[in-house]
Image (cartoon, rainbow, N blue to C red; front, side, top):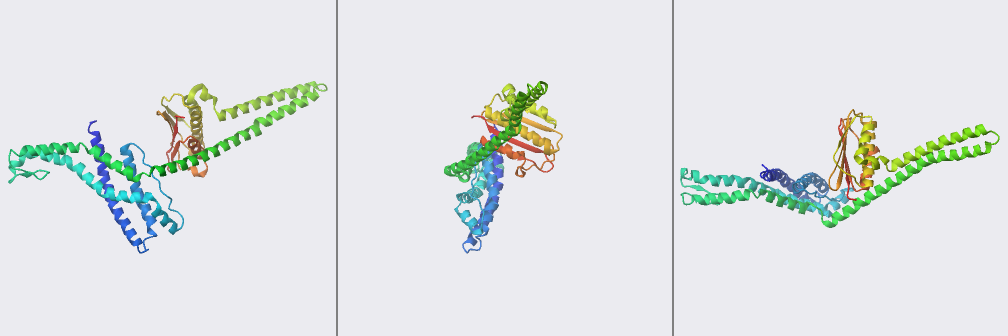
Length: 407
């Protein structure tokens, strides 16, 4: 069964590709009509809309090819925004649109041909193998796949040879499917320069988000110190000063102020510990990320199941980011989800840390509304990670985060 798996995967790939090839031909014909009308100026306003309509089909083929190759195929389009003339100009200037059109033409006919070959090779091979068994029943003989007529026992072995050749070609279908996927990658992926430009823009945006998050964190720490520990320490200084002035004329009152100053200093020290914990929780140093996450799950008011794979120790910054992401996610579950059950999954590969937080609440979570999802996204972006939220109305809500470990 293991040896047949690549054949089945390739056959499924090309059969689905045949369906998208038919749609590609239809889309290409429609696009040609729009472009032909554009020569007379009538179809120009429809060009951006036509491109928007074909992009989901091309995106599906891009995703299929990426899945078959086992590697992502990026997409890079110039935005079709603004006035109609600006959209038309962007549509004709964007090389990605020309690549999409070329793909529709190549895949529209090549995909159908590939499907015919991959499906036809094994059928023809079986037929040629069987010709020696029944040629004598057919008046005038039986024609093989290559046009040779088998009408005697002397020519029958030729049909078997053709069957062997076609059988060998049938077993090459994974290679044919891979060639098709490589063509898709070549046509649909942006050039290296464009990918680098997009990557620079992505890193610039993530860096800006990280700096904004860092600034917000510094302001939070400053506010906590100013409103909490700093005010209490100032109160301690004032209480000790008053006690020093009163120690001779009213020693009992002075001792009361000293005791009050001691209590205030204790409270200030506790607040300082809380600020330190908000920067890097000591539990991470003591118990590691898996132990710290276990403590978070145990403290969550919503019953939380925990699934932690062996992940070992990770860089301190990654462990802290993962800890606060999970803490924020569980806080969102408690405050907004109305869930009665949640789960946290934590795993790692050679270079990635995977976090999944799920709840069975009412769903409808939206990061654009200013919830804690924004903070989670920023923490992930700061490390060039990824955060994806799925929260349809009625639930469940699933948050998936990937963080790079190889820092």
